[in-house]
Length: 379
Image (cartoon, rainbow, N blue to C red; front, side, top):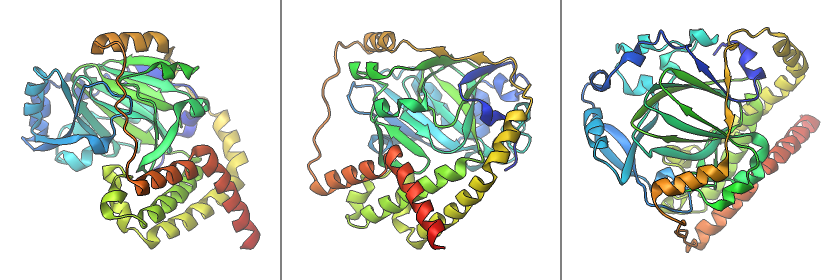
């Protein structure tokens, strides 16, 4: 995929306004979205708003199969639970002749070769959220189409405070053990945080490897696109090493035990076998090639005169203490009950410990360098 690489010189999040005024979907009402999906039955993740200390992992959610029209209707009366139709590539869920594909254009962002077919759709009601995580590949543009969405962003250097975990495992996502939906005082150890409430017509830029927690404040629809970067080959090698380890750990477990370690969209990993080994080999070669060209490419990127985002608005710092107070008041409880239970299955306990220890971002970077060094010496 080709794109203008000037975006990758930005290392702080920002909001763009008036960049998508020509997107027809901004004028869509609920009926227009229902017509776009043509009464198709959609699979929503369903969760409740009961306070808990640990994050609400996707594998713990129920699946509710309803039409988009039913979703809009039920959202008007639903108070104790939320629904999320998230991370859906538009080309997979909408008819290809839908007007939506013509109404979403990323060319205003110097992304002429990225279209709605490369974009993902997120539809949810109040309280719908994904656990806090960072994306290992690329940078991210998020366009808010309907409703408001809260974003809390944490820079990469807060990695220890974020408590990274790889169980549940999902390639390209590193989750945080911190629970921002029902936040505890422990979050106050995070020194730097940013917050923005994204409104319709606004676009948020998320730099590479920034942690983010996202929550719908009302019925909301957003569209995003991940923009690949040259340096992604480094992350892809790291991710292939993690995947290889997770795969081998899963081979020691029963099918049901292995599924407890994976995000639902990664169950196919249990069948991949020699594909992973080939991927590691390809990633090593691409990483070596990238490092040979790295100096000249970095110089080129720094010399680009970027005028596309001259009207950007910086994202404000977040007062986490105030956020926790307001969140607790909104959920109407004084303290979060300890809902965490100790893992009773010794196999799962060991597997989680091995994967999280081996796959910690700091550990895996050291392993990557060791693998590359050994590979270069012996080839």
